[in-house]
Length: 412
Ligand code: ASP
Ligand code: MG
Image (cartoon, rainbow, N blue to C red; front, side, top):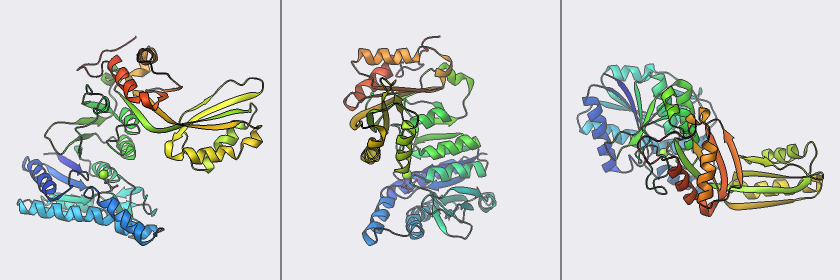
C-alpha cells in the first residue's frame, strides 16, 4: 500500500463528464489498495470568469474579497468530485484548504504556505476515505481565506505530498509530460522520462509552461518526487526528481524558445562608475524584471548597455531609462520587440565541453544570427530574431539528436 497524492488541473476536471472520468481513475487507484489524497483546481475558465466578474463590479476590489471569491472555483470541484466518487460507491470527503490544515501567510491573493497540519487528513485516510482537497487556497492564522497565486493548485499538491510523506505525487494535466522541445514546433520532440528539478525549473520558466515554477522549487526543497502526466490517457509521464549521476550522461535535456521577450539597447552613455547602477536602479523602481545583460567595452569614454525584459514591460523600461539619459551624458534608448530567447538546458553541460560550439554551429548552418549570449552551469541562452525562433529550436534539437531514443554525448 502506498500513499498517493493525485492533482487534477482545470482541463482535467473541465466539465461533468471529465469529473466522472477522473473519479473512475481515482477509484482505480484506491482499488489497488492505496491511500489517495486528491487535489483539484477549479474547472478550466472558472477562475478567469470570477476575476472578470470582480472587475465588472469594482475595478479595485479588496484583496480579502478577491480571495473569498476565487476560492469558490476549487470549492465547486471538490464537492462535485466527492459526489462523483460517492456515486461509484467510494467513501470520500471534500476539504477546503483551511479544513485540510493548510496554514498560509496573510498576504491575500499571493499567500505563502507556512505549514500544514497533517493530522486533519491522516484521520480520514485511516478511516479508509479518499480525501479531496481544494487546491490554490488556505487560511491564515486569523482564519481568513487566502489564495496562493495563479496556478497555485500545483503548490497545494506538492506541499501536501511533503507534509503527508506521500510515496508518490502525480500531477495530472492535459499534456503527456515534459518534452525535449515543444512538439507543436519540433515534430520529433520526445517525452522525457526523467528530469532533475533544476532542468525542470529552467524549462518551466521557458516555453514549456507545464507547471508553476514555484511548485517545482518547493518540491526540490522538500525532495518531493513527482510525475507530470496526462489525465486523458493512461501513458506514464515525466518523473521530476533529485539529480542522480546518470542524468549527466545526457548533455542536453531539452531546448525551448521564450517568445515573450524584448531587447533594449541604451547606446552612447558615459562609460564611468555608476552608469549601470543608475539604469538598473531605475528599472528596479519601475518593477521591470531584467533578464540578460550585456555591456560592450567602452570606447572614448562611451559605452552601450543591452538587456532583455518581458515584452509587456518593454515600454515601461524604455520610459524609465529615457528619463535618465540627460544625466548619463545624452545617448539613446531603443526597444527591439521581435526577438526570442532560445535556451538549451541540461545538467550534463557541467562536465561536457563543446556544447556551446555545437549550438553555435547548428545556428550558423541554419542561418540564424546570434545577438546576445549568456550561460549558466546548466543552460545556454541566446537572443535571436523572433522570426527565426522555431527554425533555431529545430536546428538545435536536431544537432543534439534529442529526437532519438538515447541522445548521444558530444565533446569530452
Ligand atoms: N484555479 C487557479 C488558477 O486558475 C489555481 C490553479 O488552477 O492551479 O490559477
Ligand atoms: Mg491550473
